[in-house]
Length: 248
Image (cartoon, rainbow, N blue to C red; front, side, top):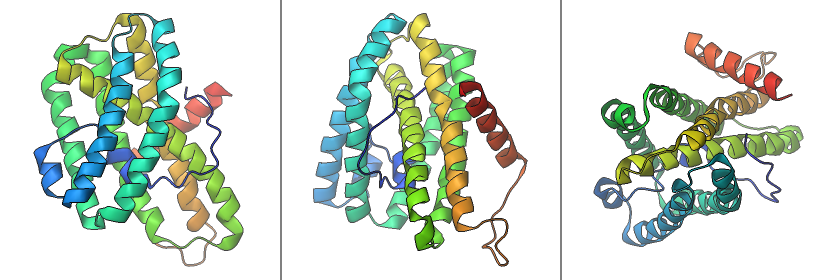
């Protein structure tokens, strides 16, 4: 699972971390951003892409882990910088539209290319991960719309760090698979198990997001903001709880 990150800050904007098309340079994304913002964001995206490419050529689990341990802290910081910049320069409605496009593109890639590229196990886990991140993004929009009591800010900071670590860890492994499909580079068998395990962090990020929501709208709140809860949400929470118990 994701190594611990010693961070003095963790103000990563939730929706931007999960779904901003950071490592792609689609023309549709560029057209929706102001000129200066597009150039800056694409510069960070190039850094993220290079960090992902650094781990893709590894044939063994040990080699992949060694490269990933070097690349991921830098990837996290670059994602933090990207999300901070996007928060300043990208209108919320544009960010929401880009996020929706990212999920749609990933779902299309899963349907059209993932089975031939990786086989059924990785394809299925990737599809579930994308679906989980879409659900988490929806959940986090609710979180951002709710007030946070001053007494809960310290606890919320810890939740945010747990959330961000898991969300970016999952996104890193998604980007590994995206570049593998794009460049037609194989994922070697020893590495594929590590990638699948990395994708599973999306469920843990969802569980952390649920904690952030409950901090703002607890079950004991006499007049909480309405939050939809369905069987799919329960499935995600059950799986996240199982993962956390297994790690413990």
